[in-house]
Image 1 (cartoon, rainbow, N blue to C red):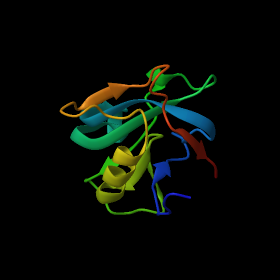
Image 2: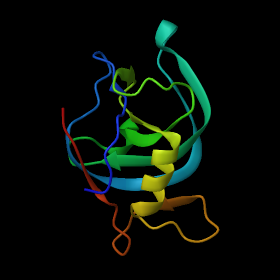
Image 3: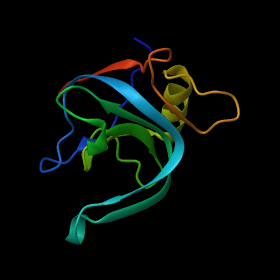
Length: 123
């Protein structure tokens, strides 16, 4: 076990997928936008993003682990499916996981020689 922390996962109508996944891309920061109506969100510069996928949940679906600057309500369901982490925890996890980020870069994709870390998400 690398770390243990409270997180915020998907709301009941935007559940976080469960199962075994691999991180397929890491971004130092990115914009996240989506939802509709009262569930619309626009979040610039979301920090320490680690998108994950498996054979049932393709990467284009946009599920990830990431830092969270817009709330501090961990331990509750708050997201549109991502795993919201305290930013300092996300930073620690970001630099611990693979694919390994090359020096001077802010984005890295997993490949045959730089596989993404396996993560397990459960209820």
